[in-house]
Length: 408
Image (cartoon, rainbow, N blue to C red; front, top):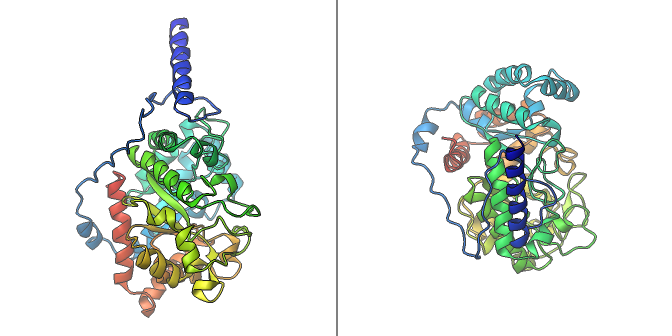
């Protein structure tokens, strides 16, 4: 036993030295269940794993409209258990995942959602997390995206959880300041432990440019106040995540770094022109290869483009016009949480869901009311407000990304 402990200590000391040597600054310890890694000695980009060969069109053809509508949603676990309070759900998780998973399994038949996003409140221990994710996948007819906000720094649901012994990073800004190799390695390490626990989608990197000192929510979550530097580091972190089999999500388009409002509370506003955004906020999206990456649309109003304060997540001008049209992004587009004040205070859950799809979004993240949002999508197809072809367009992307993540 003493020999095993001594060997574990030696491995931990070597790993710490390697991490410090490559410029990555963890402030915690590595989970002993994880395989130690070797930092990349150069800034050479890591290869992107190839997607498996899956007949997505055949999968899509075999899905009912109800199943396709469900694929559009990523929700929190408690959204699948409306008869229990949050505290009861947490208690059941603490005692074991079986009871909650049975309830969620039944709800997944009624609402066949495309994914589940986990937060620290949904997690009690490594064993509970592994069991919960396994049960969720077993209960779902179509493999689920299991998503999380794991940016490194203050927003890291696993690394900052007291039950986990994982590397903790000071901030994206601190790691980014040490260079692309370190940032890429941070992404690889985060992706490594996310993959180990069963995650497939990370709501990171933050691709915002930290240009407004009065910004209440971004700050050091962004890699830099310099747009070119922010673009390079966001791209580097994404490369590391992809290498570990995790789908990165660049956020928050069209740019949250120069706003002075918190979109959790209300609409954040950017007064920049299209040309100003293209030269700064959009550089991380235009200068990186986003193949295999998702983009999250923030609840940010850009009145110089849209002429009003419609959140970007619900704006065809921003999603279909700017992101897909001008920047040519053809991948997966995810809304920021539709339960945030920027949307929920002005739009009913069903209205927001339909508007986001009409704008060009693919994934509807955490609506304030799943039943209302899901029903509204089906009703919109029945009414002709949305076509089934439009639903198919998004579901095809979702399935392609699930194949990319090795879920299909």
